Image 1 (cartoon, rainbow over the protein chains, first blue to last red):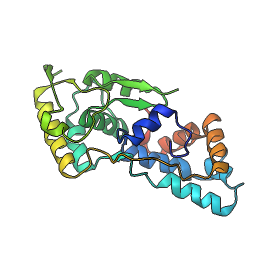
Image 2: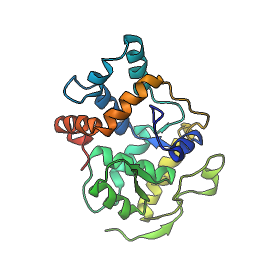
Image 3: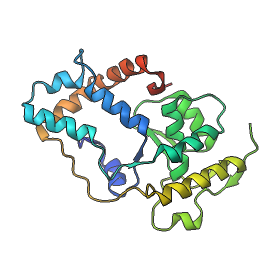
Length: 131
Length: 94
């Protein structure tokens, strides 16, 4: 999405102000972008680019565009604490489901996660795996 | 498991002025619905619902987009996530 390579429907949702992320997912993306210089890491690949462009990319990937909604933990944590799901969730999945319930939205992920899928089903939240 | 009733969590007042996502109705436990309503009111007061609408222009230079696309295609993102999740289980796909 941030690199402009997302499918058009997602971009439309983004421009309509219908797209939200979570603090955990945002932090995780930032860590993935900047973490280390090991094999396959983005920072190693980006090192082949000119320093000015590389810097521009890292800033763009770290700064969340204003179109993407992000709800404060002051709001989400009370909902996360009370999620009526059958199996325990870690923080990233609890926040995802809390935000989905709060905005009356659906969950869209790139990798299917059984516990998140089951939690969404418990709550009646639509769950989509993007290809 | 709590008793489930059909409860609208998108009250008319809260829906004014913004669009909701695809699903607009959830089967919620009444106590949980109360928690959700309180949180939604707070989110609206804080201006976090709705998110800001407007034209989106990626700020990543074209020459870098292919690098990122290749990173995604090659599983680089998943590998980075696995590394991060090993250090912090709260950031793991469960």
